[in-house]
Length: 427
Ligand code: ATP
Ligand code: MG
Image 1 (spheres, helix red, strand yellow):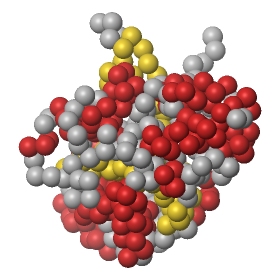
Image 2: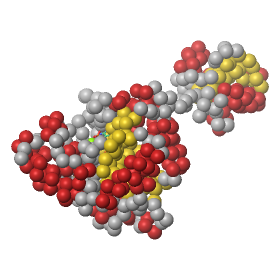
Image 3: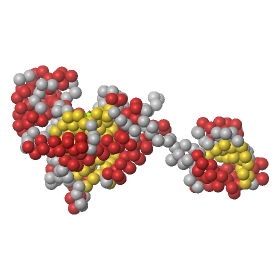
Image 4: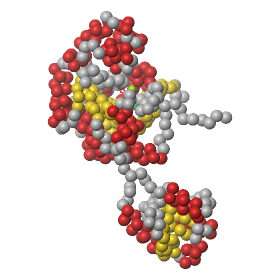
């Protein structure tokens, strides 16, 4: 029988990589605290309408990428492709309008999109997500970009390119839509089938099409920035000047539209050269009509999501140091079968005292136990055998210096603590 493998587009994050993830999440949590976001742990699946109405049913995500199924109660359920719609759903469901505004939420976890897997692009991937709900001020837009940049700075990532644009609002979009349709109409046959089918329903999506032919055609398309209404124009000016005020280097890219329909006004993307063709480490923007699109009142919002796999790939590419890997401090060697229980009880005491420790469960000979100790990076080895048991002592070997001494059993914990203190906690 053939062994079962993980489904295409999923990855197992193990050992060396998993502690990098733990580091990234730790830094996210610290940034969230410093910038005043509270954590929201939301369900991984939601009603399909949340995404079809929220993200927009003519987007790639909704049209081609969702993991949707009917559950046993005949409901259409979708594994979340992103977090923003769920955040807004949660804000509305818990009537967070009662709270002092804005409400700032952050969250993280797996997202699911049926995509063509490649480096930096998976079918199950993880995002961290920061959202400011209830504020229409451009200051909130500035803050989200500042938050993401601070997150990357603390992770040791540099050299990022921030692209920003305004995609307008329902006041100015009809004029732009009309201009875009006029432009497309004359050469409609040259666009790909998907773009042609979206021409009536959502011509803006054409600007986000990744097909080279469509990209080339849309080079000469009219720009949304030329159709902005006064309010959107002013909002965009405040965002860009505010960002230069705080020293954030951003580049206005008037061709940037994001893959999700809910964006209004500010849209941005942060790119990292190390990622190759999947170069977006972060996507974000304002979504003032999302709450209404999913059946709620008007709630303005702005935020961003960043892919953890791509954060880790960028850190690796830039040689950013992801903190110390957790290590085992102490290994307890059993020098005779009769001392197994004594070793197990010492092991327990060491761990309870807050020092990481391990011992052999595989019946290894003493020499092999020492080898195992060094393979897991233990700094100290405690040795318990017949001799030690009868004299009430424990052998302690420093694996770095090779020096071995004998200590009374009751002094072992204090000695280990002093050793740990001298080498730093490493946690
Ligand atoms: P892309 O243009 O690469 O498809 P996107 O615009 O679809 O990205 P968003 O929906 O804005 O991405 O999601 C925010 C971030 O989540 C992206 O910038 C990226 O870091 C990450 N991301 C999105 N899709 C994937 C995926 N399939 N695999 C890994 N990371 C992803
Ligand atoms: Mg995508």
